[in-house]
Image (tube, rainbow, N blue to C red; front, top):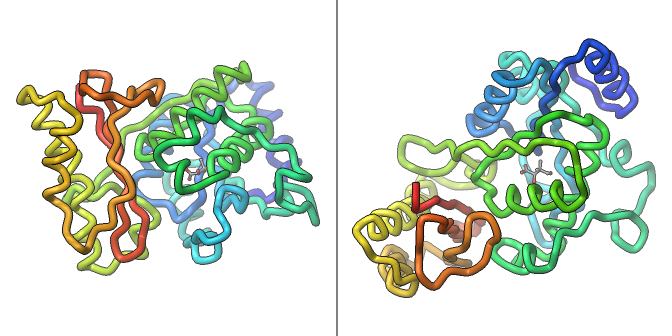
Length: 285
Ligand code: PAF
């Protein structure tokens, strides 16, 4: 069932609650791919009812980012969700989410702002305000749907860590389930933004997964010095790659590591053909 308004979603969910159903929420911005489907399948496996939200959230995009051209494929998304047995696809407009005529700025709208330490690093450095926008919309979706469990992909590792922190700090009674990255056979992590790449760009984009996999195998061979691990990674880069960051952090706290260990999460962001791509790996697994 496709619903666009908050009241209808609440009405259906109240019925489920009375039946004692466990409710799962999969928040998305649409342009669904196999990565999203893996979240939906996990939700279907462990919840009685599943809601998928499809909303390209304007407040998590910076002024020079791809909000306008972000792929919007609701008809296709709907078919995919129905095939997976999703109970509600919630696809609100920005007016429905934020109020008609509401100016979308933290001067006039209540935002949920995660701690500086968590946002002033990795993707947050080049995307000021991004995680405020993410936490705000996710908190709103949590309040609208009031799910028991919410599902997020490890692909956006910093996002999941920040959402877990928000849920803990604000005592939100929702279990956050993190699901593994889904990759093409080539190793490329699935992303809605891969649609922007040419065939050659997709080949060049393999550098992200190659670098993090190489780091993991070097670590497994006993190399733990982060500077040395970074040096080997840089040799994979060519003039087709515009590296934004390659960082080694604690997988729970985002603290930087000088020596890699089993709790290390390695994250990379790199532009290929002007498209900003991210990937990450737990090297201790
Ligand atoms: O990961 C995403 O697609 C978005 O950041 C999310 C969590 C749906 C919030 O808009």
